[in-house]
Image 1: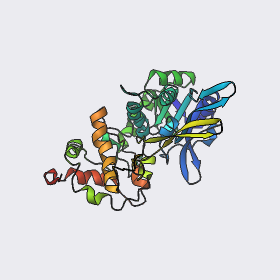
Image 2: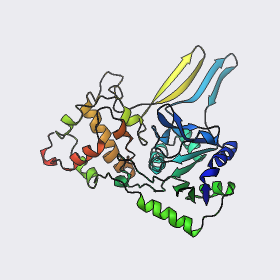
Image 3: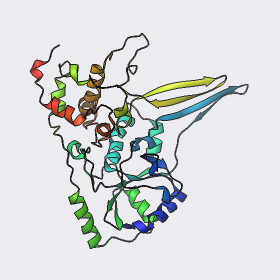
Image 4: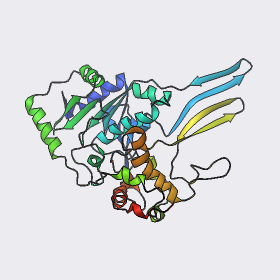
Length: 339
């Protein structure tokens, strides 16, 4: 199918009449994924400052509320089953949702709040014709036009987009839009665009998991964390990080339960009620971050919890580059591990 850029605004207007639509919009100095009211608000083409995970896993989410009166206890669950389209998602962010599915829907835990939104959300991705210098998606199993996690994949071919359905849900959405079928020249132009999208940054993570298996007590961790400020930007802006805290807020006879993002890089994240904290310094916290993404997650789900979006690289205030960390880990002598 073809979406002409000259008709995109009208198409998005049409979508907003049937769905809640999230898309990249300009907000101050940033491009953010926000709900839109009209197609003219959309700013396609840039990677958003924050990841798209927020649509399914909001930074702060009231799970339910309650009130107590003479009539008894009344509870309201805030399940969100609004039909939603996420338009203009980058392939790395779409792929991150597949990784998050492992966390929120597995043999031990099913998160009804996440899964309800996931079931009702259609992902329309836009391939990366010009990957940024901080991108390394091809090193972690993705690619500028990878369709994992997408329902529809768009390819920019100049005056229009080639729209390819990836899932039945995506096919159904495209069918509602009355789009023109793509001819052979359009498909050939799209293939040319895909072939030209080459990343300038790569890191070889082959054997990283096995290397980390023997590095829990390695001296490498003693220095790695020294310039880290524990600000948590890397985790809050990561599409796959999913640590959260639960808070109960109450006043008089009314209250609610709220889920808020948390970060393993924060000193208090692992503070026990007893006062004991197993991760007292940046050393333990940085080790946990890297182990979780490239070792524990692989053990649990047979996948690396990184999609190579580069947000943690672009936004780290002290320029701690995870690509460099991985390269350094790869050459460590695990024979020097101390117990």
